[in-house]
Length: 574
Image (cartoon, rainbow, N blue to C red):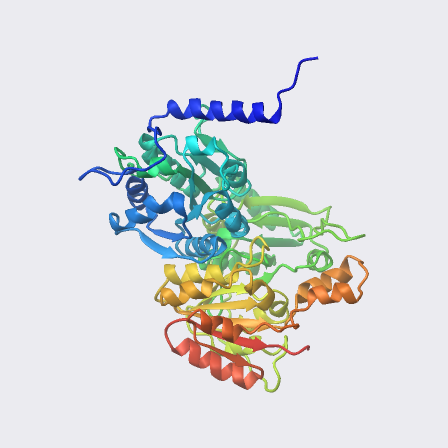
């Protein structure tokens, strides 16, 4: 039998291999001590990185940096076009970049520290992936020589990034900075895949538009870099005439049809076209429950959200003979349950795809389809209607009308209300002034506060409202500090039922025994979280409401006053 190397021999061989590769790189790594500073007029890799990002339209960077990113941080002085925004947790940075992208349609950057920093940001990168939000993630790394020493922070960044990134590239040297930025931005903004013969790329096969650049520290501090040329981003493909005509023929067939909308179909032009189609053909409209971005409110055609539970989805789609998908896929519930079908759409229904989530300009396809089947038919916009507010102790059923009654025009709502919002939030907002709502696309909790932060950076002239469940708020509560530091106009309402209410329901649905120990894991009341103290400690003015009247007064005053505010709405059981 061949002899096996012992662990020490394996480590020695690995180190020698990495050292050999490092000597062949275009950037010299003969010393682990960086030079005292670049010569006058010399451009470092870090400066070229930031300049190239700005030239490609990426001029905001949400960051939680460490030692390996210090030269990139220092380069902000040389590249004032890049706005650097400090976040106190990596999940806030990646979530804020997601919110920025949802509102602008273009990527922001997030700057993270090595593998552990990336790991802290992955949950909201997952949500960004599910939202198809463009984002360029820049992760600092050790030099090759230092990686060979297996220092405490060494990890497999490429493998970790591949779980949530469309493409990953480790910058090969100072000459590779510009090309790497061009490729990363292109990957985040268009239908793109790295060339098969380019070893610098890792094409992950993962959906979404998150693109990751791994930048070794010596690339950042070395000089001789050049800025990238502008990124050429091809437009989104349009649906073929044949596919649009086929959809028109199918809708005219008299079959009971459902048009399920998602992605770009949930903007106002798409909704207006879909409303025309529905009125002309009798087609029923449904929309994704957790949209990346949906326009709704007075003057905008309403769309019924898809249900959350598998059984409820099956009831919504019962009797459907034709399911036409526009900007989304076939409905699938979030979880499997004993004895429950995870494919709630009628199996016998015909399915047609007008456009996927990102591959086709689905808004254009809907407008063309409406021209064929609904010529001369007008859309049916939602009528202006403010809900009546009640009185007394706050409960899961009476808080939402307060938001609908006072919502300012053209607001942006980051919605992570979860169980508290499922009761009647959509109804309460249906006739309020038109607004955009940003949903929990990937169901990884801790999105609401960061996405609201990024949306406020993207839209400083629009009021941002964050409707946030209490348990998931604690995942990324540090976002409040960034809101205070940047003077962002965000009003956060914490729906404080002092429990993981959704988990209580899930415990019952999966048929697991419910005893004292299990119940205690669902409760957040021993001790009770004090969100007023938490917010105040991070520089955000805060108050607590326990009645409808208190929430009304506090929310009215908060949205009328610029800057961040937080209201802890304590909900008694309904």
